[in-house]
Image 1 (tube, one colour):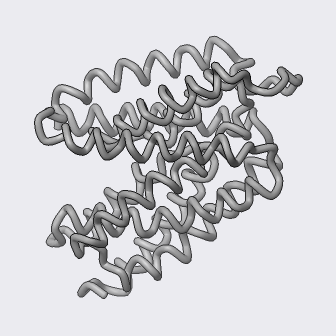
Image 2 (image 1 turned 135 degrees about the vertical axis):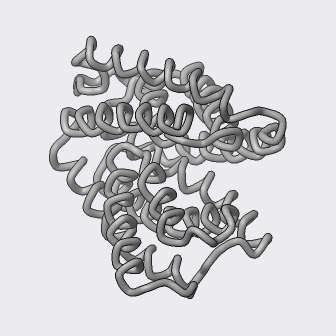
Length: 259
């Protein structure tokens, strides 16, 4: 356990709880958890911050995924195939990451996110219709594996912020899922990508395991509660949280770009 005060530990556990809830509903919990770890442990190397974040997040994401699989109409086989493609994509993105400046990527991502927010606001039915569209065609599944898995996985390795949110949006658009089912599918994909990243961080010795175990318990609680709320309240609830997270992500990227 790193040398931190009891107050800092409590605040980190609260951050893990809330981040788990956000991740379970629509993704984006890292927007809260990583800054909390940086503020709570300013002298800890960035690699250990990121590695500890992955160790915490994978527990909550797994708990949320299990909750969704039990109660939501998720095609686990399709989700796992997308997840494996995302794992490969994230490794490729990480390979190229060193040669690309975050200062170049942030404005592009902000514009994309604002466009997404405008689309969701102007299309109230996006991801909320419950009528049966029939099973996804083979072409749509292949598109999801290549574009959603490979493409967003590449983005996750290259840059990262908002990956879970992008997954929910892309799965809704490509596979015509409602937002609850898309969020459920995204959790399974997230488990795959987080597992790959965590394995790499663990191999490098960049995980504060004692702290991660404590925070992971709270993240698991938040993830389970978030998944149950999303299932109970439905797509309209997820849509509202989605818009909040998108605008929060834009604000965070803008702050990082111009502060």
